[in-house]
Length: 394
Ligand SMILES: *Cc1c(COP(=O)(O)O)cnc(C)c1O
Image 1 (tube, rainbow, N blue to C red):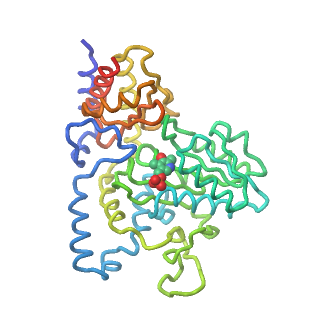
Image 2: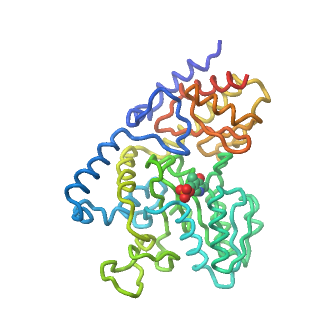
Image 3: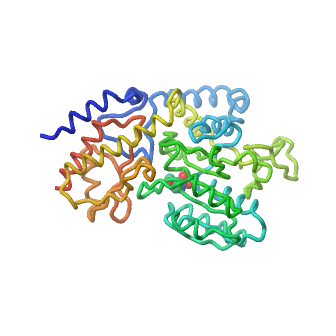
């Protein structure tokens, strides 16, 4: 008889974040896909209903001012800021991650010295970042050079304009060394652009502390903003005056209601805006961020590592040796908040897991992905997931 179920109960009892689970709508499935779509915070439906019925239905046009719609992108950016280690005034919310990657990479190239003709991109990146980087390079007359994050220090040089990297790899869950890589990029005189999709809300990022130049991220993964909730763009304070947006829509104008024929960029983070924000999604996100009140990202990170450690231990004990291969690094300094296991029949295995109430996801061609959201995943969930997995693999 394994001691792991008992241990799981003890770990849950000692978990200071355990009560946060009640802030979410969850049934009795084990939800390990919060790295793809975060769960619904329980208070969000009523807040969204108020936005629709009262703010839109009754106040109508007045809500742009009276309900704070116009300033929502920068206001909500300031709510995300402490979660990624940024002082206020540097983050604006809106558009998708893909669009923000475009803004950030083109703006970074425009800020770099004109003679620098290379854009480095993570060769293992989530595909959209790679596609956008290729287009950005073509548009700005630079050469795109795909390299793995480990190859970045050796690839940097006088030709490097900017580097686009992922903080955590979406497939393997590998955490890259943001402080060291940012420092290396700066030592080469280039700009560092980070994609935080798989780290924000799961671990400390420290954007200001590590001098990151530009960053983007989505809000529907660990930030639980809802399907298609808008992404964000961070531009370091010291660079904001030089941020030359490739999408200078009227919302980023210094006087948007001046309706001037000529463009003059707004100061600060507002310069990263484009057009009219999608208010319904934006305000659902704003409500969802309330679950973070009083929550320390350091505590979230400690629990995240404990969850993934415990999952690996349960898998090792329950699963026949050699049946799966873990592609997520063992070392804490190299691990995000997910575990990726490879096995040849991963697609079929994941279908069976989901039918048994253990929801992870499958990534082509052979990866089982399990995301651990410390706000609502507990240790008994982890033990159950590993047990069901072992049964389906047997
Ligand atoms: C999830 C994710 C995206 C998603 O981009 P969208 O424009 O929101 O569809 C982009 N990059 C990375 C690294 C991701 O993990």
